[in-house]
Length: 554
Image 1 (cartoon, helix red, strand yellow):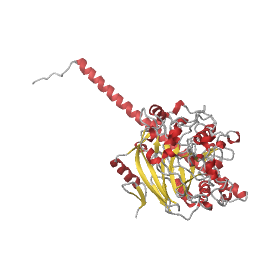
Image 2 (cartoon, helix red, strand yellow; image 1 turned 120 degrees about the vertical axis):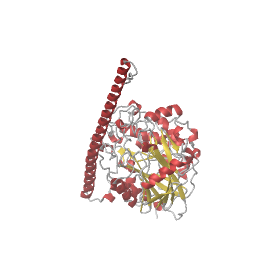
Image 3 (cartoon, one colour; image 1 turned 30 degrees about the vertical axis):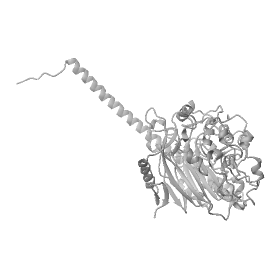
Image 4 (cartoon, one colour; image 1 turned 180 degrees about the vertical axis):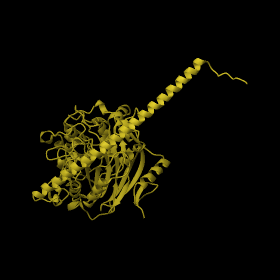
């Protein structure tokens, strides 16, 4: 019988056995760690669901109390002098807030920039505290938008040149000033006084008889509109005019995005979109961050943002006209920072909706006129971390939409003075690519009140489309200029182009992009077609063509 000796010495075999043992132990430890993380995530989601349910109940109770108080005082909701500012979620709840960074892969920022940007750690600061008297910065707007509240239930002005109708500085580029004359990225510091020569339209425009008539920036390539002002109510017999508008999702300039832009320049994000934005009639994005240089304390929540004012000049120069501030980050640095953000937007000629020094300012629309069509943009949010974030009388904050009737009143007021009303809405569940019942109800309510187009956001992913009574709803626009998370769906984004007639009929086209770190990049044709098909599958009754055009399915 032959005997074959075992290869290797006894010491080598012992080393091999030890390596195998260590490998098995490592595998066991990694498996246990994965189980622990999965369990923690499950518990977190369960607690989030419970918090959301409590927040929902609190918001609905507050809305019911508001309606009851209005009825007790002999007013119907439609006759209130201002849109109600229903309370948001309870202070303990952070409904629909971002998931923790533990769910992202190691070394990556969470879906909304998991690390506290700019070294800010959540502190028990007075995130939503309102300054005495509501603060002064917002009142320094060169041309504050007409109050949506003041217009509710009131007759339309007799003429478009009425002194009661004013357009925000962002809705019309000041005559005689081109953004090319400004240094890109050199936005004034938040504490400085606004330069009235930059903030106010020239007196020659007022003398022309229509303070609402807007001239686009020369550098943007947007043609000046020399059409006559619409008749009372913002209507005109000419229904052949068409305006082209672009909409995009969440934008921040903090955390890893800020670090990148400090190296590459604050115009870096717009390399692939600026020509599109500079040649349309109106461009709107969701500004998901305070933009302030004030010394502030971050809100006591998981994710807080803070961006530098230097980012606003390039944002304007890239063709963006209006930003939405109604979202769950607008008060990340407190009320003073919100008012300073508004002042900085005014200094850079950017229109803003959805937040302000009080409820009237928060719900007020921005009016712009292009190609003889008068457009109103309204911003509201159904995602607010605390009740104190909702704007109220003499209280800065965001325009709350927990009560759909409040959003409807703002839309109705805007419609009385515009041909086309666009509602920008913050809502839904994060990383869920289909709308929930609350989104659908709110969208339908706003369309019933007069909205011609609904543009939604907050989920950090693209959601589907719906057509309701002939009006389009884009439920989710995704991230646009943002960080990169471990969730692949958050990398998908797009530019939503609408073409609207003077009678309020709008078409919609989706152009697919990748949301790279701090920069949207166009998708290759194959990837674009895959995305369009996926979004079509999320949109019952809707067909999306190979060119991205959205239409009702036959």
